[in-house]
Amino acid sequence: QVQLVESGGGSVQAGGSLRLSCVASGYILASGCMAWFRQAPGKEREAVAAIISDGSSKYTASVKGRFSVSGDNANNVLSLQMNTLKPEDSGMYFCAARGHQCTYTWTDPGRFPYWGQGTQVTVSS
Image (cartoon, rainbow, N blue to C red; front, side, top):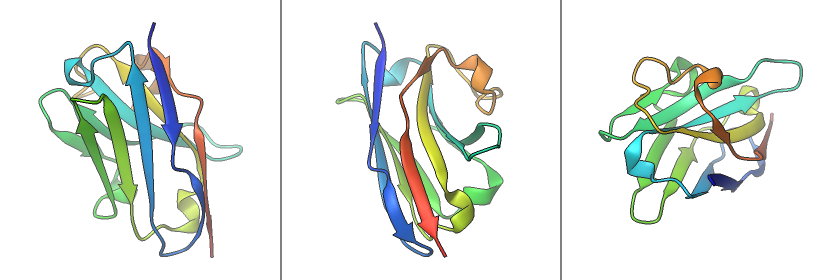
């Protein structure tokens, strides 16, 4: 049984940083694709970043240069370092996983069968 548990959310002022972590159990990080999504109230869930089993990473345009996704295969931990945070980065952040490559589908939440419970990020101006 796959379980994903996120942590690291919180409240920061604009320009600040947070580091999110997602611990995966029952799943091998190196086997497929893991991603971070976020959802603000009243908005659709959107992809933020992903890391694929070949080690490559993907980012949505709005976070490029500010966010960095990384994976610790030995401990099955997915991390998201978020710098220079903006109020529009606020939302619930979810970790998601699938057992197949997601090079061309990482932005589609429907492609991910496994989800964590989410961790809240609030950025004030």
